[in-house]
Length: 176
Image (cartoon, rainbow, N blue to C red):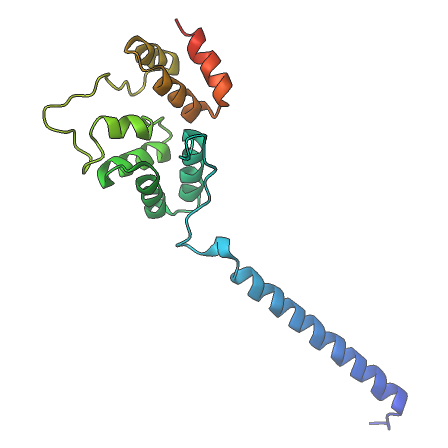
């Protein structure tokens, strides 16, 4: 091997320093990505709160669908229970319906029907309006309006379509 002069040794030293710096940079970036808070499976997703301080139906459905897309069904059920006060069976049914592509009954109507307690109706109390699985949105809105539950009809429309509240009110008002 020929003798290396000071110039050659300086060039080799700079090359080694650049390679070492690149390796350290990659390791730091990987460590930051692994420590990001969104990667924690126990952190609850952020919900935009509606005017009454509770999540809107489309916000909850969106968060549940996002969790289902990440294969976090248990966290989705837990989120529904925390945000709606539903029992385990009712929250699971809600998440299962979303997962299967069905339009579940809004969480507020489930809890009004007494399903918040272990997923079973309260004794002696029947739901005030039947749930029509498979019925189109207009039919369900019409039935809710006929039973005097206009606000719930708006909630249903917002939950299934993602409409803004003002648009949902116009839609409900247009249904005869």
